[in-house]
Image (cartoon, rainbow, N blue to C red; front, side):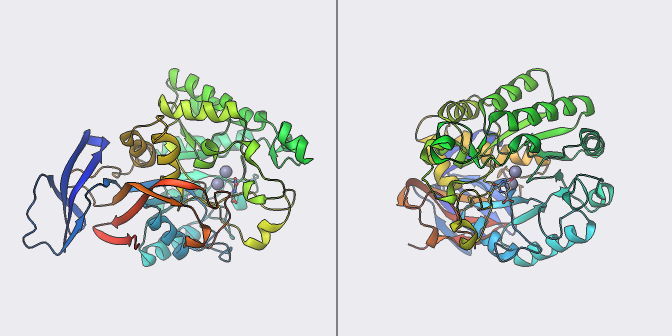
Length: 427
Ligand code: DOR
Ligand code: ZN
Ligand code: ZN
């Protein structure tokens, strides 16, 4: 099996390669990158003229709801959505049913994801048993099984002592801690950002402090334990500053931003539409600007989706009752290109860093690099395609998102996993 990608704009930040070139793939590896590679003997040729060719995108934050909540998503539909979005590796969060807090659940996900074969799924292990916050889960067992990260996503481990013990184990075993920062005692029934909009809509507000307090705590514990801390879905200007200060001190911390948090503010929320409800919530204008500036100046390292599918029935209920979360796998690259690259916050190479190179670095996996000899996980992206987002086009079971009808530029046209085409856009 060989595959030749012709005439694309190859972007490989790992080697600072940023040129029009051909990419030859043999079996599951990149064999050669260069000009005018011969088509002789090649089994499949892809014309990538006018397109970007970059390392497969890596999403550090998805919810595949499998096992147990497969009416919302499952590993097959989630993996298909990942492939459509250009993602060749995703990290699945452990708030499944049962919670991914044991070797058995980790094995179940690994086996099913391998069988589906549309994206590489890395299951994060839950920090506490059943995500109850009371007792550490079998971290050593899951680490022996090969997990690369632990997380309690959906909440924070509020017991700082227990959390510190988990961080020590993560540090000793060189795996990442993916932190959802939310002081549950401060939420007080809040459902959207606290401010003029929550008052206008007459619903409870979630203040910036809900996130900031735990982000600051987590950074201090990372300093103390030496753990690699990754702050998920940062939404406030204060978190950006906390990450900036922590990095200046040499603490091992990275920050993640989701497309919804840099695309929308709380002012965009349409009354009664729960597709605008996610946790952390859409924030104010100053926060959004700080997130974009943070991405631009390299303080924020990663763009992830927090792909959080829910059923249409759950999401038709009002802001108070509907669950938090929006889907993002099939819109992330286009929103990032439209909102950050075209508006001058990121170069295309920096977009690839935030969506592939840096996530690989945080996980410590040899991905995010398509230089010769590396695994051929490759995404081909057409930066000139213009279209409207419609949830009816999604292959994810989840259609919940607030971008219906939004015009974007940039489309994933081909996704290659281990040298095989797993997604191709059909006009
Ligand atoms: O919006 C969210 N949805 N935030 C979370 O922290 C959890 C997630 C989910 O699991 O639905
Ligand atoms: Zn979260
Ligand atoms: Zn999440």
